[in-house]
Length: 94
Image (cartoon, rainbow, N blue to C red; front, side):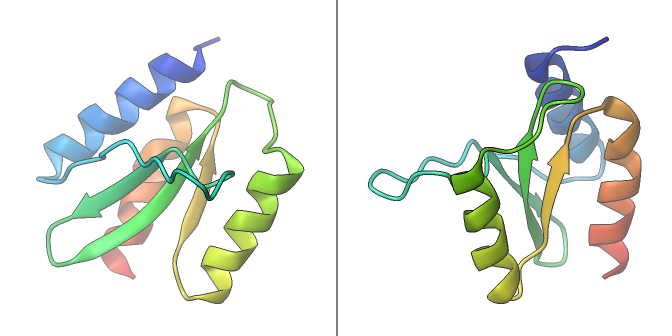
C-alpha cells in the first residue's frame, strides 16, 4: 500500500510525462482546498485531493470540492496510483 506522499509523487511524475505540472495549492485564509492543481497542455486544469489509500476527505474539504464543482471545475480525490491514468485521460479528453 502506498502512502499519500508516494501517490502525490506518482501523480506529479505522470502529469509531467504528459507535458504538464502539478503545483502544490495553498490558500491561506480559505482552508479545505485541494492539495494540487493539475495543469495540462491546451489550458486543461483540475484540482486533486490526495489521500492515503482508503482515507476520505474531511467535511470542510468535501464542502470546498462541491463549491469548486459548482463553479465548473473538475475535482478528483485520488487515493491510489491506479486512478492517476484515468484522471489524466479524463482531463485531456474533457
